[in-house]
Length: 265
Image 1: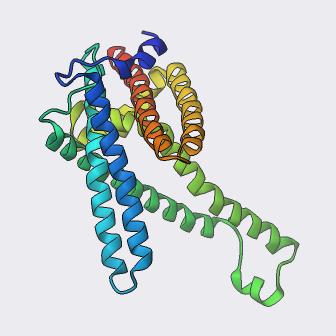
Image 2: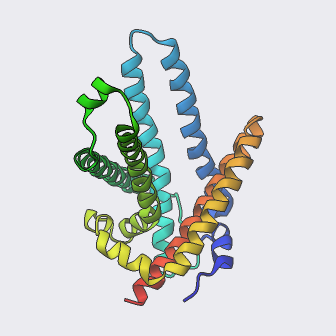
């Protein structure tokens, strides 16, 4: 099964939701604008506040997570529609918002755990790098930086710079299948089945790489368009709709690749 780009770009316009496609988009727009509005209000309030600034920011984070979770849950349901072979991958909002909120909240927790694992991984490699690279801090403090200590210091700094970058790139590469694996199983086991996720990526690596390239290009284009449109209020609305559409397209591409890799197992 090849990646059907035509299907992915048509995906945001097919729904079997009883409220109809227009209302699906209007509700999605409401959630997008709610996130932006909440962020704006609490940022302004947080800057103006001096006594309750910590409480303001904590509450801000909580509200942001709540509003984002519902959007994320909707995207997860769209992925499930594609995996199930449904031609209409734009699910209904009607009666499903609590369920979307719960699914989205769990996924945000999963991503937070991944970030924690990455942080531990980076710290471990930092410790290993310090022991591997022959650099005596006491010698540097006493004699300054010479040719020998300078080269060791450069190597150590490069490692300290490269390790988090490479770790971040690795997570970005696998993150689409992490999300889709969770969407399929709705379990922690699926989200953290790293061996299976890497196996599925390798089975359809050319299609996966194509999806990554297209997703990156779309991200750049949508970001530029959104920044240009955000000059006006109408532009904000258009930018939110473009972002929503772009996310559906990208997730549909990766869901197709995931489904194809699973069928080849």
